[in-house]
Length: 265
Ligand SMILES: [Zn+2]
Image 1 (cartoon, rainbow, N blue to C red):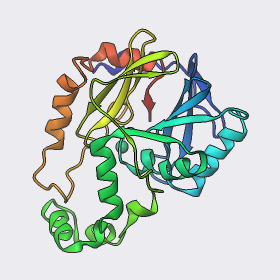
Image 2: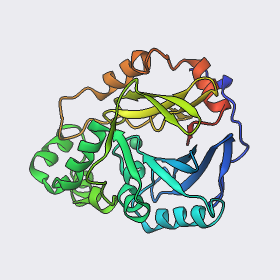
Image 3: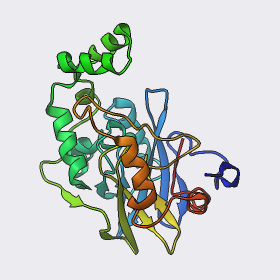
Image 4: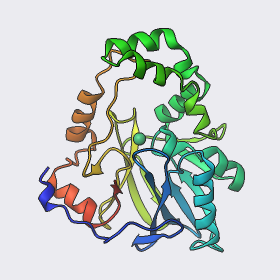
């Protein structure tokens, strides 16, 4: 990728409690995260009198307050219609349970991501320290760092609010109409397992979630549950062919950034 060709359509990201319109009927806002990567981008897509929430934020009070500020501020009088969650990471699925309970929102999500969320939420996490300790140590972590990781226990559960007991499966190459637009669902592995993206070619919108991130590459990790997996190979393959034939070359990346439907970090 030739990063010199990238330009950003907005001089600055939206401030807390503000939304930025990135296309007619498409809004962008940010929720704060308590990590080094300190925010997650949330998009709202106009959807027949309501707004589809594309991802939900982390299951923390700070993110709930962030939603409240949007819904009582720039979105006052508007309603959410449904939510589409791209992948199981807690900063994306974290408030799905809360949004469902608060507003009755229907959830659409790739099956692997939905089931992996359930597994992570109901598993023993890093409390299962025997195999996890061996895995971390065999992959070069110091004993001290391993202890810190294992001490997190049910960290995933603390950062999520569950998911509705039923959901709608979305999968690669699905056509999905949202409001007046026809989107195509793409999926890719490596960062997550079956991360969903939304592409709308005529309006040149591409919501890449964490699969394609400006300036940095996404986290691509081997996890203890699949210690022999090859997520980097999967990620690179999916960038070449997995995006439904839309190669993520400089031209597409430039397009993504110019038109704002992009996870900027
Ligand atoms: Zn992620």
